[in-house]
Image (tube, rainbow, N blue to C red; front, side, top):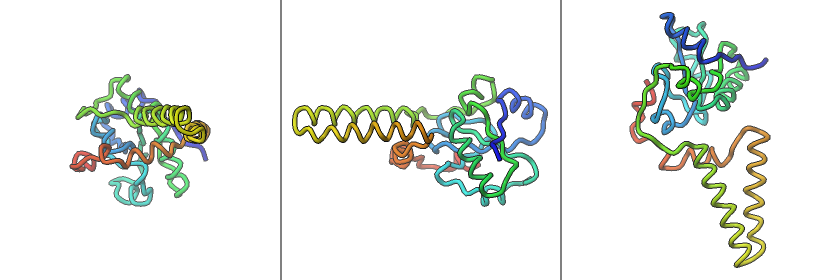
Length: 183
C-alpha cells in the first residue's frame, strides 16, 4: 500500500472548515520548537510508536496527518504506520516548509540550525579533515573522506541519513523543557 499525500492548501481548507484535524510532527524537538503548525503535536520519528499514537487519539477513525520539514520523514513515519496496519494516515506534501508557504498558522519559537544543515556542516568538515590529514600526515586518512562520501551516497539512495540520526541525539538538539512538544 502506498502513502497517501495531501497538499498543504487542502490541509488549510480542512482546518478552516472547522473539522477536527489531528496532526503529528515527526521532526526533532529542536526543529519543532523553531516552527510548527499551530495544531500539531511533536512525536519524533526516532521515538515513533504507531500503536501508542493511535491508542492515544480521541478519534481513531479520522485521518492522522503527518508532517515533517519537507515531507521525507513524514513519508517514513506513514510507512511505519502502514506496516503496523494503520491505513488512515496522510503525509503532508512538502512538510512544514510548504505549509508556511501556503499560509497555515504556525507557532515560531527559538531558532536553531536545521538538522539538514548540521549534516552538511559535519560531512563537509569530516571530508576536509580527512583530505588534510591524508595530505599532511598519512595517505590512509583519505579513507575518512571516502567513508563520509559513501555515507552521503547511501543517504541519497535510501533517503535515510545515519549522520542525521546521530546528530539529532546530540545535546544541542535536545529541548530541555518538553512541555512545548507534547500538547
